[in-house]
Image (cartoon, rainbow, N blue to C red; front, side, top):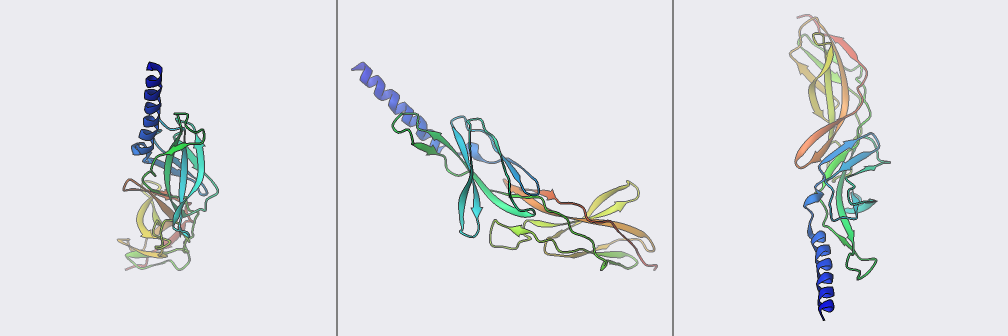
Amino acid sequence: MKKIISGILALAMAISGSAVMASAASWQNVNQQTSGTTDVTLRWTPDASADGYRIYKWDQANKKYQGVKTVGGKWKSAVKLTGLTSGTSYRFVVKSYAYDKAGLGSNKIYWTPKSDAIVVSTAPGSTNITSSTRAVSNAVRVFWTKYNFKNMVDGESNSKFGGIAVKWYNQNTLRYQDVAYVSGGRTNVRLNGCLANKKYTFKVAPYTINWVKGSSVKVMGTDSNAYTIKTSSR
């Protein structure tokens, strides 16, 4: 009789352990990400109760998450997703899973709820400053070719998660420094405060944005050609 009771208790504990794992999602918050032009890497805190993880990407066309990769291993904490499109923003979630430890069914798997969603964007390519760029005595208006961002997160503007960084060459530091960030839908910006009869050199670079836990991080693309223009005399 003691053996029967002991077996029942062990079975109950095993089932309980699996159930606890299935309801614990606090580990899942994806906390880091890096981006290439056609790949992204997601990182998370491992779940000690897990046997593996499943990554889901938001399918904007069908309005649902689609599983894109499964990785085994309790201490797995990162995955690289390849074959993506440059300059594109995606939304991901992660689940962990554990196999049935109670022996009630070899195919039984317990899943955690989905993690918090994050937006991860691949790095964009480049754009170029055009000859439409012009100057007056105290300002320069820089023009560039439009970059075609792509938004796979929601149905809003394709430039929602991207923009253009405008850079000026500082003759004192001998380095380019950012002087303006503009939304991805724009193709020019006016830079005031210039000096008359002076040469200025500019570059532009598209960027996309990663969003995680309410914070944004720019993913910079390639710098454009350098463009030098001289302001007019007063």
